[in-house]
Every structure is written in C-alpha cells, then in structure tokens.
Length: 445
Image (cartoon, rainbow, N blue to C red; front, side, top):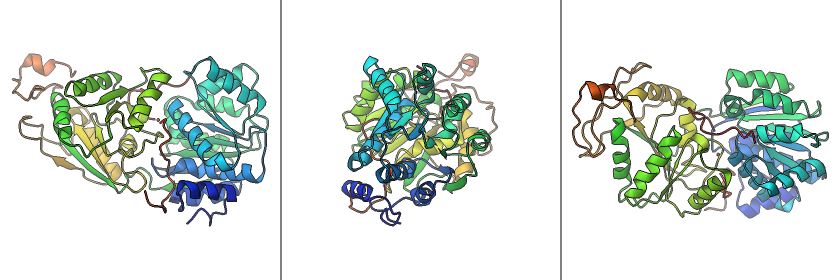
C-alpha cells in the first residue's frame, strides 16, 4: 500500500515524496489507519520494520489537519539515543507540516535543560522523553500536560526490562484520562500485557513477524574458546575492504574497550561505545561511525534496539546475548530496508545453551563454520547443551593460536538508492535497548 492510499495529508505526502518514500511497510500499513481512527493500539514488530514512522506519520497528519500550539503528543522511550533519533525523524518529516518537537533526556548541559524546560512550560507539539529525565521535570512542578491527546510508549518491553514500570505509571498520572494510548514493542512479555491492561482502553493488536531476523541477513556462527575470539575477528576482517561499516556487540562494558584497543593495535579503525561514555562522547562516536570516519564500532546492547545506523554490512556477536530475542535485535542492525548483510556469532562452551534457544526462537539452525587454519582446534558444538556448562572457562588455545596445556590451574582459571522504496528509519546522525548486563543506563538525571 502506498502512503497516498493511506490518505495522509498533502504536506506529509510531499515530505515523503521528497525523501523518496512511496510504499508503506506492513506495520505502517496496519497501524496508521487504526491510529488515525483514534483507537488504542498494541503493536509488536521486529527491529527495522519502520515502527517509528508508523506512529509519527499519523500524529503529524493530525497536527497538519488541526494545528495546535499545545503539547498534544508525548512519546516515552527507554534511552537518550532513541529519544534523539525519534526527535530527528519527526523534524525531518515535519519540515513541510510546521510541527515542533523536543527531545527530553539527561546528560546534557545547562542549555539543553533550558530548552527542555521552555518546551515543557510554553508548549511544544511533540515531546520525546526518557522516563527518568521527564520525571525530574515533573517533580519540579512546572510541566503542562493538560492538553496531551496521545501517549506513545516506544520500545515498551525494553523500558519494563530496565525497571521503568512505576515511572511510566507516575507519568500517566500527570496526563488527561481521556487520551489515545499507543504501545510499540518488539516482544509481548507478561509484564507488557499487565501495563497494557492498566493504561490502554480496548486496544487493537498488531503483530508483524515477531522475533524473526530479516530475510536479507546471512547468518553464520563459529564455535570458539574465549581466547580465540579476538584473533578470529582480526582474521575475518583482514583484507575484507568490502565491509565498510561493522558493528561488534559484546555483553560487557569492559570488553568494549579491550576489543576496540586490540583491533586498533592491528591497524583497524575501531572505537567503542557503552554507557561508560557521557552523552557528548557517545554522540561524537556515533557521528564518526555514521559518517564513515571509523569503520568498526564495538558496542554493548545500548545500540541493539531502536537506533538506526545506515548501511551496516557486518554484525559480529562477540558474545551470545542472554535473551534470545536480543539476538534478533542485534543482527537487525544489518539488512535494513530490504538490503542484505552478514551476521556472525562467536559461541563459546558456556553459551551453547543460549544459542540453542536462539535457534529455537528463529526456527533456523545457523550454519557453524570451521575455524580458519592457524587458530587451533575448536570446541565441539553441543546441540543439546545444558544451561550450566561443565566446561572450564578458559580451556583451549592462547590468543596467538599456540597450544595451551590443560591443567588444574587452567581449568579453574576464570574467563577473562531507487525512487520507490518503503519507509523504514533512515540515518539521522544520532542513534539506541535489552542488555544482559544492563549496560544502557536508565536516564535518571
């Protein structure tokens, strides 16, 4: 279905045409008419399906048809990166509509606080906010939300995973009881159902290809010992100039700096991003990566959901994610907007159980590739591995590829561009979801 068939305003059609978008994605095709009809909605769809535009477009349509100087729409999302991205997407689409928006999140300077306060007191059509920072403003007593008509919870499951259930309830207490509520998520967990039952009124439901990787992702895996991971990555990236943008996901902040440092030693353009960096540093790293100033970005799951970075060629899971659905979000960074990409996962002995669960979820047995010559023998992959591995953490070969003798000490050692295309989120220069180690800091500033 085209956007014209969805009967959006002429201004929006002009904006979409200018940006080269003609066809709606399935989530947009189903959600936009329901939102325009004023219905509450729970929508589940995987990363990269165009969820943001699915709620932004109908809201902008309503504001185009009925202009207002008040804050009519509140969007709540889990992280500052996602708040920035949504705000930029709104600004891009609203160029022909004349709608104002402001992102409210922590970690900024005095000027950003002043901008946020002005928007919250004097009115701004759309506020995009993280829960913690918004509550900080609410507690100061000057926020005016009496004209809010639409509440949108984006990445709702992620917010609940981060412990924002009570914060969302508190924010809702400041809003008019009569409003439209929209909840967008990648999964439908029990906690999400509870929240939906409490704040939504007779909602419609949409579920689009839940928890399945995009068809364009070529998936493969290597079974490795921990100390073979970095040498393997170096081998894989050597002389692979066709991979211009590479994302490496790891589950710990410590590994981010270690991996990035090791790659730089070998001459690769690599930088790391995690919640250890302040907001300005994170934005600068993302800017350099999106501008292709750096080729490799090592990240925690702060980037696995919500954040859209254009043209990722290769995603490497240095660690298997703890949640099977997070695997889909990670590899969803590549093969976006009907393109293709490669996703590789490094599986150690302890993570075999978790990868079994991933294969069950995606209903696909991922091809296990033999290690390149020179890296030594690999562990044997166990399709029915138990949750608690019996293997010692550091058994295997050294990072140089030489043999490591197994002994009691070792066994107890701890592991160290066409005109016609669908509208999915475009690169906006700032880009962010569930980390097994909670690496995304809740924005409580």
